[in-house]
Image 1 (spheres, rainbow, N blue to C red):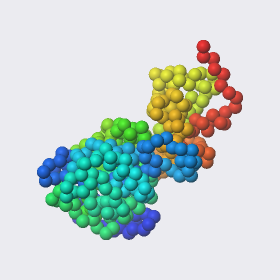
Image 2: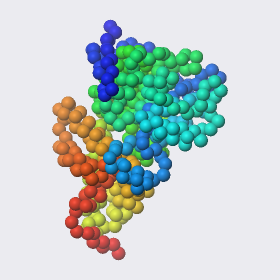
Image 3: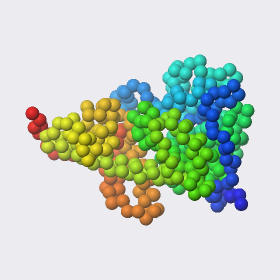
Length: 399
């Protein structure tokens, strides 16, 4: 029996009604051919570049502005890597709510792709005025957005009215594919997936990533994939279709299970990250105050049982981790506000599942206090906040 679902769009949210079941949306029978041929090519859509891009270190003015906004900078290098790795004759259409950011991307990345356009197809990079326009023209749509409300709003625009089918004359696939790399709650993601499938608009998967801005720039991200499950083990054909796409932007794809399971894995991971970031900052602050050289302390920790991503890749002390946000006054990176948001999503999921998170409330308090003083900066700035609360100076005993 076909599931019924209605979509009511409002500017702030996507409202889903009905029994929420998945329809028998046509399953793709052929794996995407990513090599350009004489008769087929792919049009890619990317929504959500972020505000700061991959340009120079922000100026003092930029840093002042960052105190009042949430900076989400992962999308820009992801789209950059996507454009670099897809066939030259394919078109990438981009959209960001800040039009100047999309134009900047077209100008900067378009230089590297100069001459890649194909006669009759358009330019290698195009800027779309709206998510709906982008989706209508695209075979694959990738979204990287800050939170649940943003994702719901974007898909509200995309799905109403019903999307036309993709052009069979230029596409090797029969279903439009939506890949949401945003970090939102699993329930909202599943609702959106049901809306996409029940309206026969295409296929939808959740694929949040881990690795931060550093991983996005280096294309070493890990993607946690959630696919609709029709047989209890997931849709194998869909996994095979999505995986090589994600590998354009990352180094590892882990299929976590059915719809929403990618996000379940992401929230568990980011809960651990939220705690380990604070613990790393406390440990580094403790060691320095006891007189240890921070570089030697980090070398010890990263060669011992305390090693973690926050201590090794994103160390909060300048001079320890090359390229870390600490090297540029904590500008860019993964903002305190976004870490607090992800922690809140993990806490919400825990409450809904009856799981106790003993350290969550205190960690949330820390990020709330840090955000008051350091809004917009990378969440490793917790170290500077702790340092300011500590009494006494360091007593170096090196040598």
